[in-house]
Structure formats: structure tokens, C-alpha cells
Amino acid sequence: QVQLHESGPGLVKPSDTLSLTCAVSGYSISSGYYWGWIRQPPGKGLEWIGNVFHSGKTYYNPSLKSRVTISVDTSKNQFSLKLSDVTAADAAVYYCARVDNSGYSDYWGQGILVTVSS
Amino acid sequence: QSVLTQPPSVSGAPGQRVTISCTGSSSNIGAGYGVHWYQQLPGTAPKLLIYVTSSRPSGVPDRFSGSKSGTSASLAISSLQAEDEADYYCQSYDSSLSEWVFGGGTKLTVL
Image (cartoon, each protein chain N blue to C red):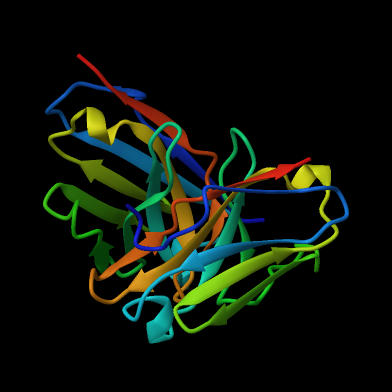
């Protein structure tokens, strides 16, 4: 059974960098698929942040591209998200997910709430 | 303002059939990109319900079905049950924006 689990600080200061990691179990990242991050501000809808292929090739939401870095560590079977210069608008539940080539996410982590506050 | 437009809410009585629309444009649904649907129960992560317009993952009841016509897609839920009460989101790719986009979500209330 494929499982994903997000981890990282739940509180980030404005202008700092948000860093999250997604640990994958039950499936080897090196075997294929894309691996992605999606966020959901409290009470609002879903927003795609970006995807990374096991080779390291990345695809980012153009509106976040200047601040986002997604990387993969196949040796640890995990992938990571870094979002720089955060503001209150970046406060959200962040989900990691396995992404098919057709773009759908078939396995999701439970999500991690990130608050932005000084 | 979402690129994919969904009604904010729909409702139906147990046993009834409801549909949720997802209206896009020629740069996403109308361009032939697949539409995916997710169900999000309160306080939980989204769950894949329909992929590539009309395919169901293993374990999803056949009460859930998807279709597409022109620049719009629809999710139909038949024989409505209390546990179907949730938020539903559509997703597709937009070639003009070069990004995966979600609809704004639809809250389904089972009366």
C-alpha cells in the first residue's frame, strides 16, 4: 500500500522559507510517477504547487515558480518542497501526492497545516 | 476566480441522483485534456474519485460516474447516501496557463 507522510515546521515566520518533506513508503520513487505538492488555504480550494519526476525534472505553478523548489531524494525515498519569502497568503494545509502522467493524484498524504506568523 | 467553474453547492435527498458541473474553456477541458474528480470529506485529504474523465479507481462505487462534453465535464452521483456529503473538486490541465488547475469546489449536502 502506497503511503505518503508530510513533515516539517507548522509555523513559519513571514519572509522565511517554508520547508516540507514527504516520505514515501510502499513504492519506490525511482520506479516512476511524478510526485507533487498541492496546498489548500483554510476554508478554500485546492492549488497545485508543482511536480517532480524521479529523474529530478520539475514542473511548477507559474504563479509560484520564482519562489518554489521541489527536489527528490531517491536514496531516502522522499521528496521536498521549499517555498521562499512566505507571507500570510501562503498559510495553508500542504499535501504531497503521487501523480500519474495524466495529472491525477491517486495517493495523498494526510496534509500538514502551515501557519505564517511572527 | 478559478479557471474551472463549479457550482458552490448542490444538494439532494438520499436515494436521489445529483450532478456537479465543471465548466472550462478551449485551453483546458475543450482542448481534450482529461478531467479528474476528487472527494474531500471534512478534515481529510482529497480522495481520487474519477480519473481521465470517466474511469473509476478500484474501490470507488459505480454510483459515481464522470462524463465530458465540449468545454464542460460532469460528475454524477446516483443513489445518494449520507456519507457522500463532502466537497468535490474537478481538475484538468490548462495549456494557456501551463499549469494543473482545480475547480473552486462544490459542497454536496445530503438532505
